[in-house]
Length: 182
Ligand code: FNR
Image 1 (cartoon, rainbow, N blue to C red):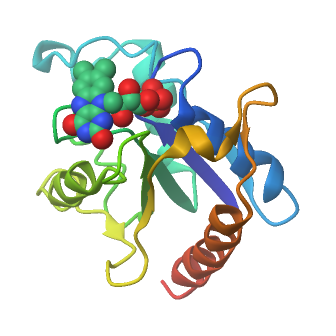
Image 2 (tube, rainbow, N blue to C red):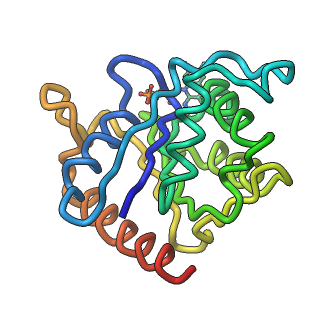
């Protein structure tokens, strides 16, 4: 199965990117996860949408060709970071590549709340008319990783907390079933 991972942080030592990289490695036997490059996307410009820059074309093509998308994002000021919203805005016009696309969302923060407010906003964005993704329903499927700084091995740059990894394993299997059930 081909999966695109979109990480809502472009910070060099991003915890959310560490989760993405952990997932690429940990699930490589069952999933081909490719981490999208959203750093190279310019600001969304409606004047450019019919003939967008190459980076946008490649980003949209990768989503169009994927079986599913995993969005891994921090919370900025109780919402999603602008870089993530910008990337999603590009996908929502002309070819609407998220239409019915299976999507799983998760996020991590060193804080206590595990990105819950950002996740709620993200769910609203993903059902906007231009996006209309098929999002893994809430109610047991939220992957909210709080106090993430205590759950990574900074030197290795990966998640090492066993409880978190076990939970992630079970939710990835749920997502695979969700994709297959389309
Ligand atoms: C934050 N942070 C943060 N954390 C949180 O739990 N809720 C929030 O609303 C915010 N708001 C916020 C705004 C801005 C501009 C920054 C830079 C940070 C803290 C944030 O969770 C922390 O910096 C994470 O480490 C960011 O994720 P990455 O870059 O490690 O993936």
